[in-house]
Amino acid sequence: MKPIFLVDDSPTILMSISAILTKAGFACETAASAEAAQARVTAGLAPAMVITDYHMPGQNGVELIGALRKLAATRFIPMLVLTTDSNQDKRSAAKAAGATGWLVKPVDPAALLQVVRQLVPVG
Amino acid sequence: MTFAFGPALSRWSRRAIATGRSLIERCRVIAAGLSHSQRTGITVLVIALLAAPADVVVRYALPSGLLALVPALLAIVGSALLLWSSRLWSAPASGAAVLETVAAISASAPVFVPTPIVVPIAIPAADTRPSVAVLDRSIGELGQFPIFTDILTSQMASVVALSDGAAQNIMTGLARVDAEVTTLMSVIRTSDSGVGVGDIVRGIEAKVTDCDALLQHFTARQAETSRLEAALRVQLDAESQAVLRVVDGVRRIAQQSNILSFNIAIEAGHLGNKDNGFAFIADQVRKLAQDVDVLAGRLSGQIGAIMHRVVVESQTLAAERQHAEAADVANLRIALADLDGDFRMLVDHQRDVLAKVTIGSEAVAAPILAMMGSVQFQDITRQQIEQLTLTVDTVGNRIAGIAGGLRDAAEEPDTPDLSQLLDGLFKGYVMDSQRGAHLAAKGNAAPEPEGLLIELF
Image 1 (tube, helix red, strand yellow):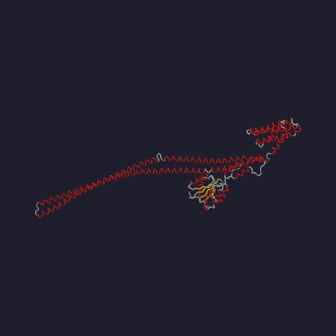
Image 2: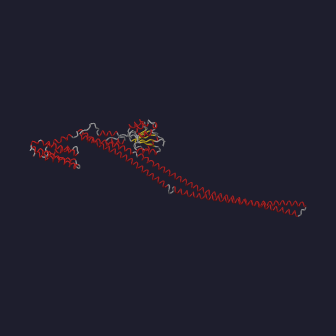
C-alpha cells in the first residue's frame, strides 16, 4: 500500500493526522518542511496522496504542490492543503498550482477520513 | 567695594549651586517614592530657598552698578536648576509645571522671587515641548490604544476558548473511554465468574470425566465379554468334538456289529439249520447293533440339542451384551450431547463476549479518534499566539515611536500611525476567528467565513 505523505512544520499536527489515518488503515510518511518533502520524493518516495500545511518555514504548501506536480511520482496523485488559513485568494492559488482540495484546521477526523477514502479508496 | 563683592558673589553662587546640586541629589533618592505633584512642589521649594538669599544680597549688599547683572546670573542658575530638575524627575511636563508654579509663587511672594528672574527660565523649556501637531497625533494614537487592548483581549479570548473547547473535548473523550473500558472490564470479569465461562468449563470437565468413565467401562465390558465368549466357544468346540468322536466310535461299533450279524446269518444259512446257535447269535448281534445305533442316534440328538442350546445361549448372551453396549452407547451419547450443549453455550458465551468487546472497542475508538483530532488546537493556538506576539511587538514599537516623538519634538510625518499598523496586522490574519475578533474590537461586524472548511476543487 502506498503511503499518505503528510507535510507540516508542526509535530503535533503530524502526530495527530498520522494517528488518525494509521488507525483507519492507511500507511503514513511525514516531512517537516516543503524542502524535506521534495527531497523524500526525489529520493524515491511514491505516495498515494499528499496532505500539506500552507504556512511553513521556507516554501509554503502551494509552492510545494507546484513543485511536486513536476515530479513523476507525484504528478497525478491527489494533494490536499490542510491549514488554519481560510483565505479565498490562497485557495485559488492552490487550485491553480494543482491542489485537489483545501481543508481548514481543525479538521474533523471523520470528515478527513471521508475525504481521504474518497480520493484514495484503500484502507 | 565693587571688586571685593564680585569674587564673593561668584563664590557664593558656586556654593549655592553646589548646595542645590547636593540637595537635588538627595531629593533624587526621595523622589522615587513621590508623586508628580509632590516632585513639582519640592522643586519649587528648592528654587525659592536658593532665590531668597540671592535676593537679599542683591538688595542690600551689591552696589547699584552690579545690580543689573544679578538677574542674569540668577536666571542662569535658576535655568540650570530647572533643567536639572526636569531631567531628574524624568517627567516631560514637569519643567512647564515647575515654571507655572514658580510664577505663581513669585506673584504671591515678590520679596523672595523677583519677576525678572523667572521669565527667562521658561524659554528653554518651551523649546523642548512637542509641537501641537505631534501632540495631537500622539494623543490621537494613544486614544486608539484601547482598540489594541481590545484586539489583544478578543484574540486571547479566542485562544482561550479554543483551548478550553479542545481540552473539554479531550476530557469528554477520556471520560467516554474510561466508561467504555470500565464496561468492557465488567463484561470480561463477569464472563469468568458466576454463570460465566468458569461454570461452563467446570461442567464440561465433569461431563468429559463421566464420558471417559463410560468409555472405559464399555471397553472393559466388551473386552471381558469377548474373552468369555471366545473361551466358551473353544471349550464347547473341544467338548463337542470329543463327544462326537465317541458317538462316531459307537456308530462304527454298531455298524461292525451289524456287519458281523450279517456274516453270522450268512454262515448260519450255509449250515442250513435255521435253528442252530449261529442264527440266534446273529439275530442278537443284529439287535445289539440296532440298539447301539439307536443309542448313538439319541446321543447325537442330545448333543445336537446341547449344541443348539449353547448357540441359543450364546446368542442370548450376545444380545444382552449388545443391549448393555447399546445402553452404554446411549449414555455416552447423552453425555456427549450434554457436552456439546456446554460447548455450544461456551461458544455462544464467548461470541457474546466478543461481540460486546467489539462494540466496546468501536465505542472506545470513536472518542480516541476525536481526541486525536482535538490535538490540532495546539497548532492553531500556536499560530494565534505568534500573531499576538507580532501585534504586541508592532504596538510596542509604535508606542516607543510616540515616546520618541514627544521627547524629540519631531517625527517623520509619513510614519504609519497605530491605526494603520493595526490594519496592516489585519492583513496578516489567516483565521476567520482572528479577523472577527479584530473587527469586533474596532466596533465592526464579524466577516463572513471565507469558503468551506472542507473544499474539494
